[in-house]
Image (cartoon, rainbow, N blue to C red):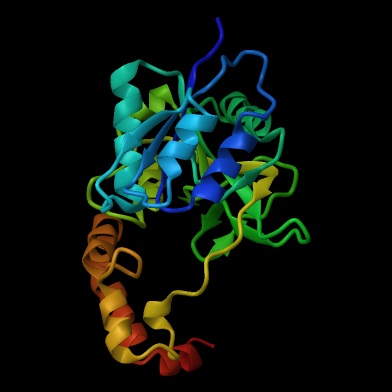
Amino acid sequence: MKKTIAILITCHNRKLKTLACLKRLYKLERPNNLEKFEVYLVDDGSSDGTSEAIKKEFSEVNVIQGNGNLFWNKGMRLAWDTAVNKKEYDFYLWVNDDVILENDALIELFDCYNGAIMTHNQESIVTGAFRNSEFTDKFSYGGRIESEDVIPNGKLQQCKYINGNTVLVSKKIYSSLGNLSPDYTHAMGDFDYGLRAIQAGFKNFTTKKYIGICPTNEEPQWSNPKVPLKQRLKLFRSPLGLNFEEYIVFRRKFWKRKWIIFAIKAYFKVLLPSLYRILKK
């Protein structure tokens, strides 16, 4: 019997990128045992005609309207809840709308998933490894171990942290962990999910090769010494910056009493970013 999969996406005012992502998705090669996927896409209050364009070009996509304040984590939660409430899928695939997937991305993800089960006899999450551009093999997103990137080397490698750019989650893992945590608005939900998976006895793996392109985001502006202090402090508590309160929730959840160290370091970075960079070297 063929397996079912729901692809989960959230977007906001990136019509061209979102459409390009969907075009690539529908051209992907599929494993022989996988049914045609269904897409659940949250349009979080876009004003650039994203929903209209999607409905015109991809009428099969389930478009869900957000309120404009969901950002990544809450948008993905809504997409996931909508998919689960519609029917029970065997797999769920998180996809960021700014990724450009290789034609065999799905095949690689499932090959790694099946390989992890055969090798470790354990349900596992698989995060896709991405390079920064088509002109380089420089790593951008995927799996990490502490501060180190897990670079694809042709072999199945475990990781501790997962970037949510493209992530394969099985029904069994969803049944155990549920949705992304409601504790976060934008960032940290992906790292949280991977760490919860490890705590529950599952494993995280990264793909054996790059499955696409996803340029790295610019450096955090909340700790950029070129940005005025007033603006840094605003970003310090913004969903598009550090979002300090939620950051501390994340640190307390997984680092317990050590959270205070991360809190002090965060204030050091926002108040004295130049000095922080000098001392870090």
